[in-house]
Image (cartoon, rainbow, N blue to C red; front, side):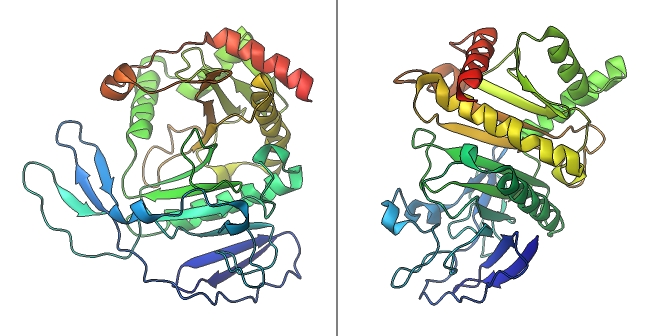
Length: 361
């Protein structure tokens, strides 16, 4: 793999990840771009202790442009984009409209009981392929391996940044999920705090260890493998299963059989085994109702400075589509109280996904 670092016209970092050592990455971004926005401000909710990022500049971000104006496609004569090169394998660059960044301004107190501090951190865009019409499910094993190398590289680099407490790699796919760009891509958030979901899971893992002496995640995986009914697919190194208490209509968790805290700790064999299992699950999702499924794919890994002994790297994949033409909305119970109600029985969801996988593969 060849890794090339360059910069866009406004100073943002851009990194090419190439399979070929002779890839030419000398193209320069010639655009006249406005100055980079200042970092968001973080406000602490005194009722929950959670941090909320207020990023007003994100209101102006690019929203669902036509394919011939996509900013994530390679640049062409007369049509410069975020990627100056005429072609690429995988590209990572700093988001032009970030929720967190290192470009700080002044942050005044807002009164009341809400503490305010700068939204220090970084947000990056990961372009999985130069092919605008592709999807992650259509990537070759070699391309998935290159994306994983980018995730691993960025996790290590961002974890070393001052103020960063957690690195989160994820993909939002589909207009129903709320994407603003249709090109196959994901994002990486380097948070200046440990997120509420991660903190809660680590607390449950600590409680489980204290009570049983076991590893919560490993025990969940072993129980699902024994039960079998919710397992969607598995191979030598990974198991994909619908959790017994799934929140979402179609939700699949992918666990490596060996517990590791972060992506970088996976062996070459484990990384290679991930691609066919994951892309197969994605194709099964698309095959459920014969339409591209909107989804969120989220990597859970240990925070930077805590929890490495409790965390267990895994991916959580879920879709908000519950039936043809019907979406699962987070209405009163979910949005106001955080209490989920699932319309699809997890065992039924697993059966449907297994059958779809048999057809699509």
